[in-house]
Length: 315
Image (cartoon, rainbow, N blue to C red; front, side, top):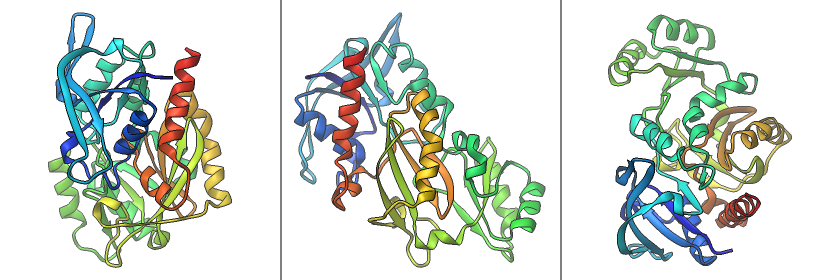
């Protein structure tokens, strides 16, 4: 099956292909003979009832510093494509939300992965709140008094923005940390929305599992181990990827999520698990598939295209 696809992503010249999941997906698309049209979010436009994008034909090569070529610059009607990959990274701001509204106008006639309406309604740190019994103790607030009361109860806590990514602006506050008031004041100044507070789980020292699911089914996993003097385990901030085996609890968490992921059309998701707890459900631009393959795991890019091709063939 040869498809006409489009990819909405961050500027391709700036990505690090060694760990970039979107790049792995594009390599597999090209291997299968799919025609790839590339554009960035700021080049998306609605003209009457037509959703247009200014972009170019993309070819890719797994070669550092010479990983792409763009030809045939043009404006395309995205409804003429078989599939659009929604793959730009957060921040999950109004610009991001607007692109989901625009892409919703062509989905599902043109398959958008992931479903833009459910991407909009399921940001990483809010969708997960539907599964509070799987999570560590969690608070969403803007109020200092709430944070102080939470820390009094749980002693060691994490404070992080609701719409961040890659471990940015994630802070650990120990019981004797005198910066809690200043940090809350900073969050109140920088962010208009509430922020998230969670009990710190010491299991993170052994790693934060990223489990990847394709159409609700487990496809692979890696462990992200933080540096010795770092709370955050994200690869973007120096966390080290390592192979990992899933526990019975990990599989129970995935089984709980499966029906909801399938119902929402969230074909490619990545969940984060620390110890026995689910902490995030990543639906905007999940990562980790190149690391899974590097450790001898599944070729998840191929699994993604198998799932996309099945959906298009069945439509």
